[in-house]
Image 1 (cartoon, helix red, strand yellow):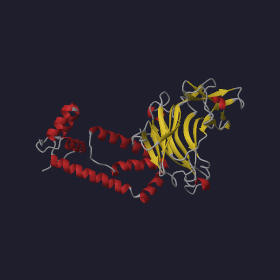
Image 2 (cartoon, one colour):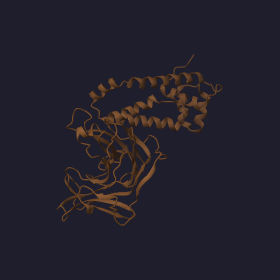
Image 3 (cartoon, rainbow, N blue to C red):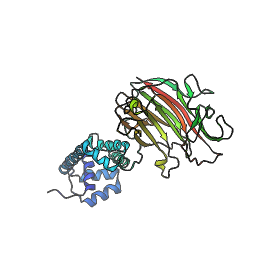
Image 4 (cartoon, rainbow, N blue to C red):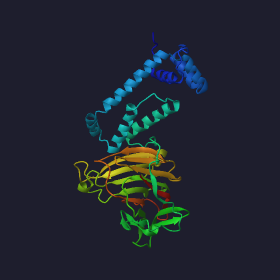
Length: 384
């Protein structure tokens, strides 16, 4: 007769069944003793107690039942027509919906193969973060595949070691009025092996008094490949650092055609230095923008992922985009943060790659004596 057990004990039995599936260690032990001993003496002695106390036949039944339940949950939520109505009622964004399907993917692809405690608890944390991201638009740590460039070749690299910007491959972009200030070529410099774009208030400048920032873009335009920047984001409120693609007509509904004709692809934008929570401060947005995907041509369509970097305002991080025939895959520090073919598919446009320090629409709260800097170590491009 099988003893009646609680969920925590069952979970421990599942672990023990995979670590030590030996029928001769079948000594019954109560739930309270099992849990107490496990957490009191884990990892070494706790594992021995689990091995001695597991009931193998019950473990197998528990594992089979758990696996079947997880697969069943996945199948229910795969009914996309049903879920579209739910998303509509909840008012979720496309980014939230993407995170939800990632969460469901964890259940759909659930497997006990290659089991380890590290993977088990890491999986729990990922599932928790993805659920919160879907429900509450919170950022997640990178958790996906590790970047593999074995099929790519490096076709462009600038480590900004020269004394000045290489204007044969770059140009200063969008000079003149920009939102509540100006972009100016004077705000872009190279120093100590870095490209530096400065945001500051100037009284006697090219376009008059006001707040200034800057942007540079590659003269060579690209369609598909892997694109990466290594940088320290500007450490201030209001201004934000960005690395992004802009096509020739991403905001026109007819020409963008839901992103197939053209899109804006934000490899990253860092807005969060004024946030209270540490994770939110280190969060970045990675977004695909287009128009013509739905019936509302007055507003742009977007799918956005919010992910967490490592102390992004003080340390170098890398941010990348793998743009394939079928999807966009975003990375932070070589680990996937999200993938999407949002809209009617990936852009077929030849697009401009941009590094910029952005000025807000209004309401700059910095003191006029303050400066902020976006520091870039390198920009690299790989293609097949």
